[in-house]
Image (tube, rainbow, N blue to C red; front, side, top):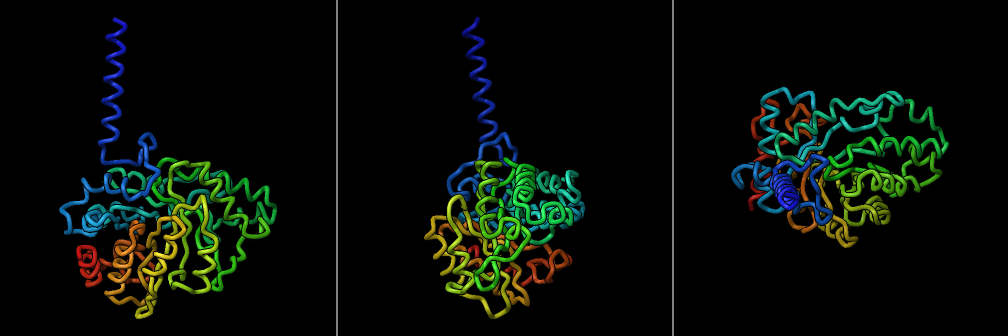
Length: 343
């Protein structure tokens, strides 16, 4: 009888493991996530729900071993056209604001995760992955943060630790740990975090705390105007990338007709042993072909894991230059991007 019970337990465990590993949804903290190049895991997760290969941005990207994502606004999830476009076209979701400090802890010790939880539920329902955004940023800090800590490093560290431990460990695939830390000349921005630590050490501290909070998520540093191969800001960015940073995000806020050789930059950063991603277009004052240029740059670099555009339709962004118009109709930029993915 004891042997039968033991056999029954083994069979039950096997079935449970099979159910988890065969599921299309990998965002539950109980499900393991691989530590190798993230795109391998991402394709297993999204391919089943991505649709017919090549017919949508999501399916075309998966067919090329990449992902295509969008920054999302939870207040629009109840809009059927928005939800349908999101499910169909995008395999990765970035909370545009829902995981920033002013959204999750507007008053000290008073956490509010309603919007962030909505993003998690949306992703879980549609086999999508999440880029957490963001742990440390100079902007969108509620007033209580600098008022409480000032330049007291111990108090600042306690705040950073608290936020890292309440940033959805086990639920994220990528995590923008530090966002926009540099000035245009490649020096460090004089932010609250910089001043509290008396210098750049806060970056290493943020990554240390993020890794302690979530041992398996890919940890990213993210910035804009770092796409020119030898620009001053690009060089400064290159010089701060080291372990435990797993990935580098390039926001790609380009002006029409002024797209640098971003493929060369992606390849340069790849030599550091990290993965790279395009994280925040649309280009400002964009031309439809700009998206295709960015997409082709990512396709040309093996460790570029994907592209995330900053919004789903034109009213869902600070500039109305997305791939779908306000009526969710495909624009020329959508067609150029899809063709680039399928080429």
